[in-house]
Image (cartoon, one colour):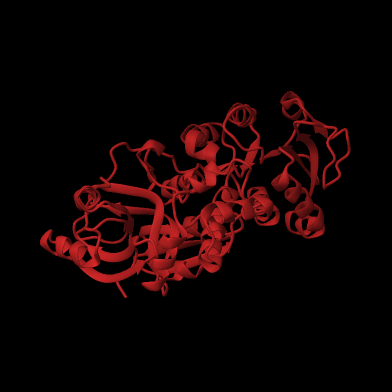
Length: 421
């Protein structure tokens, strides 16, 4: 490492990359006094070197050829270009050269992290990824500290700001999913192609990384129970609210007797639950430790500066710490089954028309089938459509199929986190 100067390369100069440069520049004196070195961006890989950007870099720093970064004698490279290919090949080449890497790329880590962690250990370089989970919330650093004394039985949270913004607006303004998605895209919260966010992939990648830190292993992504929010309706959200609940996209990792279980799905929370209070584009992570109990961390989970903050904190950390081997990442196939538990409580939303679709008949059927109904909220519209929300115990897919075939009802069920209120 050059005396007095840390030579930093940058892969990607989009929103987060620009935020990294702004943060380094605004905090340069503080960083220099604490690190004893000045940070200098010496190369930045971009798609188009002629493009106008919000941050200015000398033209000689910009390149469209990764080989220029590799040859530029950088000490550390910050990867914020996203994606898996060709990003994996670039990061692998840098590690093999002995270069430290800071990344905000949760998809890369979830899909190729086991290999990259192993590679970093073999070449004795830092691979830092705080910015890959929950943006500016320093949850990975907290976990590293807490795992020294606490056994973490469960991690759950709201790990995607875009979907939390959409659900908040659907509830507050009683708008449809499509209407709010359009708002989110106009505000820059959602991409033109929003599937990674709204179908739960983004939250699943972050959950995979959390599980690796907490349990020393994760499940293959194909075995994670993942459901998105694109089919949620304003009616479902409204009835949930009238029952005293709120629907959130919850990512959850828990240790069971059969192994770890990972899920990302719309979940019912009592309004009193701490995660139910997290609104708009904020993220939150809740930890359950055997000694400390429950802890909640919240903050802005996305955007230019929150993510850039985590990147630069990682950069500063690895400049002050000697290399120590990273805990090995592992994948274990055949985690805990995600079959329905007959004792689990759930929120079921039913909607349909027809002479058999009356509240009394539906309740009678459920009682005979052994389903306990704790709460019921019924609505009818002028066209005779039955809309009802039920908090139940013992409701299964079989009951759902029978309500469709015998009563002509469409059924959507959500797991319930917390006690019935």
